[in-house]
Image 1: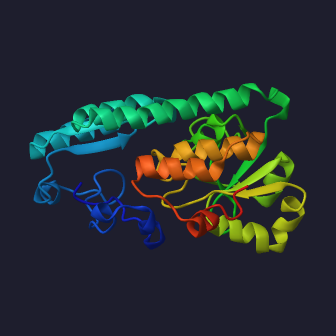
Image 2: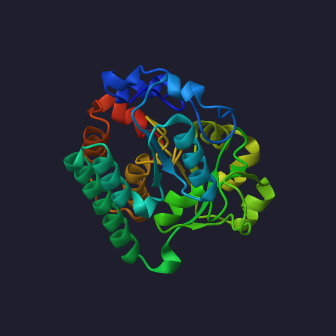
Length: 278
């Protein structure tokens, strides 16, 4: 590993092993701010470029362009949540870490099975209807079917923001819309949303009569920002939060961190991590 895209937050570094926590910012190839040429990529001298996420034609074309221009092999891996076991096995094979890839894939597969069992035990009409609040006013949401809603919807919840096909992952709504949707649960996707939902008087009539839970965000957001393996512990958390699944969440978090990040959170770190989460 030669660098981060983007750099982890300062608060996140304590959850990472020393060999990676202080690596520099690397080059972003996708989205806004991507390089106009690939000399900056070549300067890093990587043996391999791994792109985990969307595999649509735009990303395939980018992978082909980068590989042709740099001569560096480019692995494009499907990052959809249900594809995580296969993705982790593939990454292990590519990197020559087959046993580790299998261990990570097994955890991912077990997590998907566990959430399926939790969902199946609850009748459809008793599964939560959820509003996802994001941003400093809580009014940026993740519409139904969007990437940022994937973890919550995979956990069996109904996303009340059904705003039509083709909507992006971030969309502005109004307090009146949220009130009319009448969600059972409001999930604060980030700390900015949690703060406004608790402190802003305009939100009080909605929040006071509904359950508010706050997504943990360290070392990365458990609901999928970025959309990577952090979603697995997010699913375990949602199973406990939505369905009261009997799980020792503290032990599960420690297990996940040891396996995926190589660290073991302390009791104070875990308490801070789960503040407002259940």
